[in-house]
Amino acid sequence: MTSPSHTILQVPASAQPPLRWVALDAVGTVIYPDPPVRQVYFQSAKRHGSQFTEAEIEQRFRTTYVRLEEESTNGYQTSENLEEERWRAVVREVLSDVPDPATCFRELFDWFASPNAWRVYADVAPALALLAQLGVSTAVASNFDRRLHPVLNGLPELASIPLRVVSSEVGYRKPASEFFAALQSQTNSPADQIAMVGDSHANDVEGALRAGLRAVWIDRRRPAGEGHVQTLAEAVDRLFGSRRIPIE
Image 1 (spheres, rainbow, N blue to C red):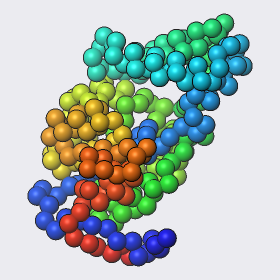
Image 2 (cartoon, rainbow, N blue to C red; image 1 turned 45 degrees about the vertical axis):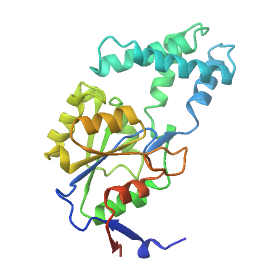
Image 3 (cartoon, helix red, strand yellow; image 1 turned 90 degrees about the horizontal axis):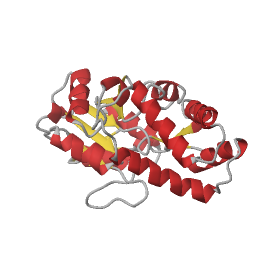
Image 4 (tube, one colour; image 1 turned 180 degrees about the vertical axis):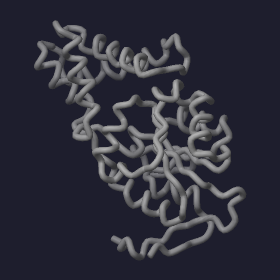
């Protein structure tokens, strides 16, 4: 493995205009739940009397999450209350045989507010170091709620990221143009000097591009291809890729 002191990064010889900010999605881009969501739901469900298997819970979660997203009557508008109600509905439908769904919901909701529920992908810290070396600022831009703050604060690799744009605080979820307008406002930068990196093509890539930002799609399940990257290092290379600078 190459020593960090000899890392080589490609950056543009003449970016017009130069990127000033890279905004990173949270879940699936820089952090992931550990244990996985299905295991956490299954263990909580068992404690509260559910008879569903872990496989059944995983399938029910996937189906319910997608359906509730599609059926939202608020468009992309959101708030702390709406986010909590959305997750309450997810728990209620996924674990429909639990006698006390309110208690089960609170247990799960609070669990995912803890940094102990999350891990940082191994490639994140080196990529953040490379961006800092280039003088590029970073932000987290996420469809989450205020629980994201204690999560990031408790993860050393991410605690120092200076800016967090959170959908429940902005009032709109990605891919709404209002979300990216808030990102521009909080970075005090024009859209074409900001790049969005995220694992949702619809939310992170299409939404950002419509708003005039640059964007890179990260898909950690597959090796990098023409339309996506697998790691943040590859994302940085896509964004800053025409001349080489040694990182000392």
